[in-house]
Image 1 (spheres, one colour):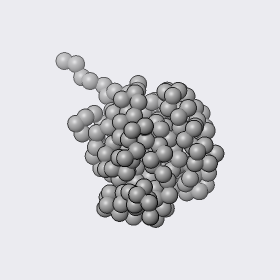
Image 2 (cartoon, helix red, strand yellow):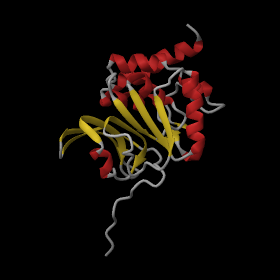
Image 3 (cartoon, helix red, strand yellow):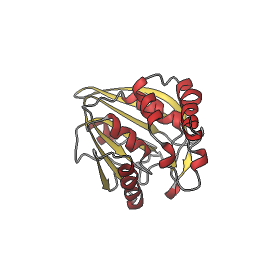
Length: 218
């Protein structure tokens, strides 16, 4: 086993699995995906560390345990059509691509879209459609979706996201303002019904142009 393979194995056994990520599909996906291929130059030696890795535009690659927990909550299927908001360097995009039939990923930053395209090609992943745009308020162009993964935080979740889920569709997002944000799973259970489950608390940078809660002014 090489040093990189050992680091990836340790990431699974010491970070992801202890965070109650026991879904073998998610564990196998993360163990097979070379995370070091997606980190910025100079960060290869911490690719498998239990940290959020800074990338351009003040954004971060989520720590592996967060990625695993959110992917597990999405309960992905091979037939799923998924939306990702915020591709960053493409790591989560690649995992979604391996798990789903089709992925649409949109980012407001063209350099992230270009980088993700390069990184996906290097992993021979070709079922992802990348688009440049502002999806902070939703991205209905290819909906309805079976799964939605929002990679940046949102102070409040735009209602259009929930409405663009298929019945039975799942969405994960980190919702709230610092110092308390909650990773949340939302499942559409009927035409006008959704179920919400809190997964964990963390703090990460918000999506650019994300909706803000209304403030009362006295």
